[in-house]
Length: 390
Ligand SMILES: Cc1ncc(COP(=O)(O)O)c(C=O)c1O
Image (tube, rainbow, N blue to C red; front, side, top):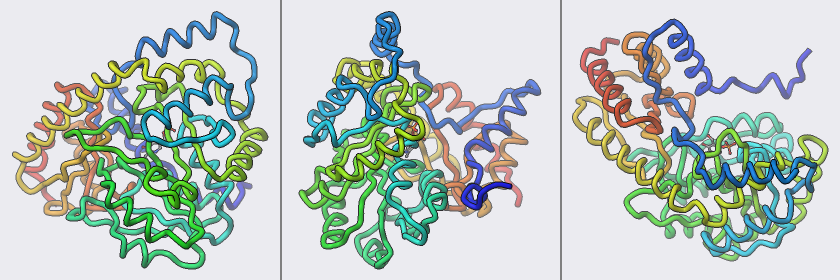
């Protein structure tokens, strides 16, 4: 009954773990969850007020598919201000979250048997989107000692005449690693002379630590600018996950207009109120609130790293961005799903198995939760690891 396209889609492991944790909570258990993919901070007040104003002013009508002029101009300003990138208004489109941006891009670009290069570990949805479009995900397995980043020779080797798209995510989910300007430049050089399109997922741009600089891939060279779709949103950096706001920009006008046609025949414009709400976040009017959130994440990251360093037999890469830790448990258990299930059952702590991100022997811990939860949860993990039997 179901289409073949639909049958290839797998359920997100992140959601599966959350469901298990919720079952336990419903039974009255005190579960500590490190599985969140969203900030635990509330949406900044300036954003809420902009939404209320838009509602009161009757802004509930359909808008242009790409978004109204005000939001497109705000995105244009954001790219100029934050990334030194100049996009025309018709090179920008808003989408129902960055997940939707990625989905639409992949639908518009990828055909049967086209190859899409995805560094692993990866954000769970990339391979599923590629498979849904009929394409073939080609994974490049990164190494912990390289900061979970691909090298130029790995990229070079992965490219074939079927390669259509390369997905880059920095700061990354699930690791939080970030490519330096030099690394981006060398990756960009490898792509020169090819027709490969880069989908640069920059969702965690503002959540960076140790004063590390961020470089949008499109800003790295003229060649990179021409081949890149810059994808971003406000779920993480604007604490607006439920508002569903994502956007993309590209010099490839025919791609943007194809996305507009796809969106025009499916979801149409994104929520009109969300468009007004997003303007202050994009134009620097809530920079202080966003910075407070970022600073809190940095403290929590440091606390969690310190506590993990005291636990024997597990180790962790120090991330520069996002709000995740990707923890190596290979010394005690290679089967990350088993580890996560046992931890949840015995210690009531929810984490996400690395296998869901394409790398077994690790788990992802999200520190988008209170300091108290981090302390108690990591104490429980320490106890679990010390007595672990496989
Ligand atoms: C790397 C990455 N990209 C994109 C998204 C999609 O975010 P949204 O659709 O909420 O904008 C997420 C969300 O978890 C993510 O982690």
